[in-house]
Image 1: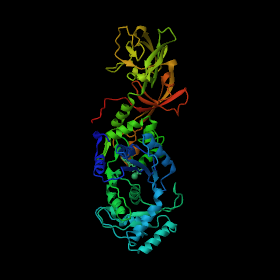
Image 2: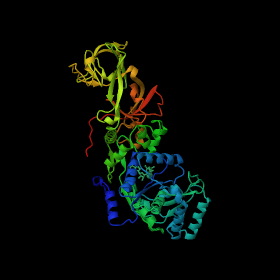
Image 3: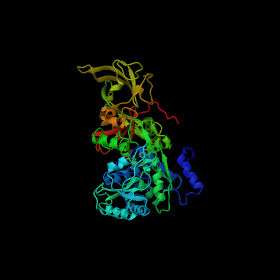
Image 4: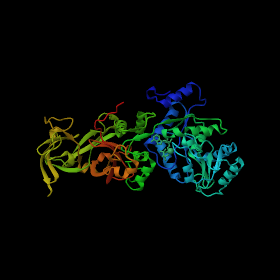
Length: 552
Ligand code: ATP
Ligand code: MG
C-alpha cells in the first residue's frame, strides 16, 4: 500500500478511515488553487500531499480551481497552474473542475438556506459590516436587516441575482450568531454582488459565492473524503461544518488542517511575490530566484527534487520555516548520479602553454566519474587555455592549492602545468599567464613523479564556447523576511552574470540541459535563450555542497 516510514498524522487518519470502513468508494482528495497567481513550493507541498495520498491509497484527486472572485482571477493563471501541476508529475486525468461549474447548485443551496431562515439579505456597507462584527474580546451586533422575512429575503436575493443592485450594495449572510466567540461564525457573508465578467461564466452571474460557502459544498459534491487545507482554515472549520449541516446534501467531508510550508530567505505570499515582479526586483514570476514552480523550473530544478523535498519536510501541525539547504540538498541528490559533468570557467584568465608543439592534443574524459552509461566526450589541450581568475594568485592566501608563480597545478583530465611568468596591465592586474606543461603527466598515465597540491578545471580556447552564466543566491538577505520590509530585505546580490567559456562538447548534448560544471556547481542550459553555438546561456541550479547534511 504505502511506505510506513513516511507516515504522518493525515496518512494515519486516512488509513484508519479505510480500515474502519468509514469511506466506501475509495479515497478522494482535491487540490484547490485560486487562479490568481502562480504556484510556489508551498503549493507543491499541498499538491504532493493530496495527489500523493490518493496514489498511495488507490484513490483519485480533483484539480479544482477555486474561481469565485472574477476581479483577481484569469484564464492565464488557470493555464499556468495546470502546466505546473503536470510538470511536478501529477495527473488529474479527467478530474479538472472549477468552483464556477457549481454556481447553479451553489445558488440553489443559498435559496435553501433562506427558505430555512438560515440566511438573510443585508444592506450594510462593507465598512458597516466590518464594524458590526466586533472583535476577539467584544461580541458583534446584529444587523438591522437580520429579521427580514424569508419571503422578503428570497425576493431580494433573486433581485440581487437578476442584477438589480450595484456592486457591493447588498450581501447574503448566514444567520448564525453575532455573539459567537469565533468571529467567522458571526453571520458571515455567503454571497456578494460583483458586476464583473468572469473568465469562465462571463456575465452570467453578478453575485459570487464566498470561499467558505463554496469550498465545503464543492468538496461534498465531489465526494471528497479528506479535505486537506492549511492551518489558517482551522478557525473556518465550524463554518465549513455549519453550511453542510444546514443544507440538504448527503455527504459531509472532514476538513483536516496541516501547517503551511515556509522556506527561509523566501516569502510565499502571492502579494509580496507579485510586488517583487511589479517593482522589477525580479524579471518575472519565473525568475530563477523565485520560489515559484516556474522559477524553479527555469533554474533547472528537476521536479523529482521538489517531490523529495516535500516528502522530507513531512506533514505536521507545526508551522516552520525550512532551511534552504535542505532544498539544495534534495536538488543535488536528485541530479548527482545522472547529470553530466563538464568543465567551464566563469572568469577566464588566459594561460599560454609555451612548450606545446602540436596545435592541439586530443584527450578523452568520462561524462560522469561513476555513471558509465553517460559515456565519454573528447576535449583538447592547446596553446591557449582558460582557467578561472580565482584559481591563480600572485600572493596566495594560506592553503591556496591552485596556481601560483613558479608553482604546479594539475589541469583536470589533462596535464600538470607550471607557471613561468605573467603579463599585467597598467593597474597590475594579471591579464595572462605563461606556463609549461609536462607531457609525461597526462591524467591516467602520469609518469612525471610530480606532486601538485591542487586540481583545477580549464577550457581550451579553440575547444570552448562562450557561456553566459547566471549565478543565483538567496532572494532575501534575512531568513524570515518581513512582508512590510521586503524591499529593504531583498538581496541585491542575488543575481550575478559571468561571461565565461564551457567546453564545446556541451553544445552537442541536446537531450539533457542539466550539467555539473566541475568545482562551480550545477547549471541548466537554457535552450530558449541560446539556440546557437555563438553563446550558450546557463542558469545556476544550485552551488556545490558546502558540507551541509540533513539532520534526519
Ligand atoms: P492566498 O493567500 O492568495 O489565498 P494561497 O497561497 O492560499 O494564497 P491558494 O491558491 O488558495 O493560494 O492555495 C491553494 C492550496 O494550496 C490551498 O489548499 C492552500 O492551503 C495550499 N497552500 C498555499 N500555500 C501553502 C503553503 N505555503 N504550504 C502548504 N500549502 C499551501
Ligand atoms: Mg488561499
